[in-house]
Image (cartoon, rainbow, N blue to C red; front, side, top):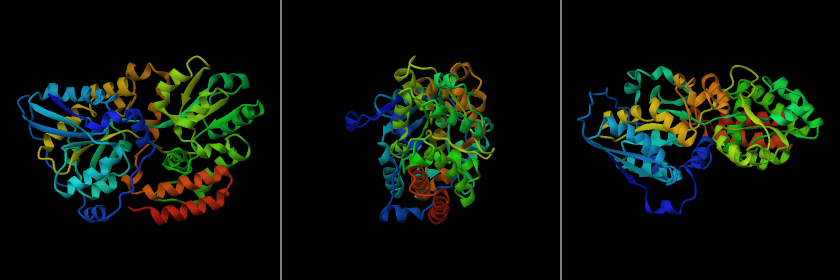
Length: 440
């Protein structure tokens, strides 16, 4: 059975689950945890107590509390995949408790300080490092190591601390390259596969009086989300922020800006504004996410033909952040075996992931689902599913240890696009700033 506790304030909220996921996926709305509570609890560290799964069956009874932040209009998805668990374990009472997205880390840390909290968290924000240090999560490593399907999940959906598995995303959201097929046909260029292809296409599109590309140039974590595939393609990582790798990516986007391929006003665009600009119909490409599939159908419709393709990369090292929501066992759960069973039967199962695909558009992370008709019948998903397998990277990067460093990258990414810094200066500032702010 399921009990839903949405809270009285929910009716006043207008954000949809998709908007919240989008914010989490792009790092939007991140919370800078500060003050004596977070600092005191950070010394506690994650709860590393692990157990092996005991035998559970239909007679297993108990109570399970799950914290989530899905709004009233979207909570049906959680109810539906939670029902899969209840079908197998009908005597376990599942309580779904709504906690507003930005409040989740604060409430979780406060609860952990009192050695309390839910049995399961559904959370995809980038405060997981602070939450781990406060003891919010219990390691799921022993469960994961014995999980028969663990090989179906790419490493980018696993969050580890001290080499132990804690969080797992069953579905993901990420960016790819959208294109206006009508413009490409009119100009006579093919869908690009390499950066050289892209640059050649941009030159022809610009000469034809169209805008080559729209992307997020904001000096925010949405900017970092957008920049990371280009940076990592040249060898950048937060652990090794080499200036030369950063400069190559910054030189690329600086050239686009100087030549008018990328509008300078993109420094004001988030992902939503980027989509809106592309949807006008005179922009050939945009870097944006799979969450735009629904809006494209509604807002573009038959106005022009469009498609998606993987982002071109300078090398096979390219990483693309995998947003979405991870499942976590609560650090003070008294029923961790049941908590793991909930995770296994919902967002780690094929059946549960089909529910999220159909109801919210989340791309299943499981390799064995990439060929299912539900996925392959939508051609717009093909680029994203291939990126998940080939280039998926953990988000938040380094388990949330790079939050301040991400801000440095975003600020310099935006400054290069705006023409406020040269690629070399921005690269030096970014490299120095990441080294100073990355907290392993």
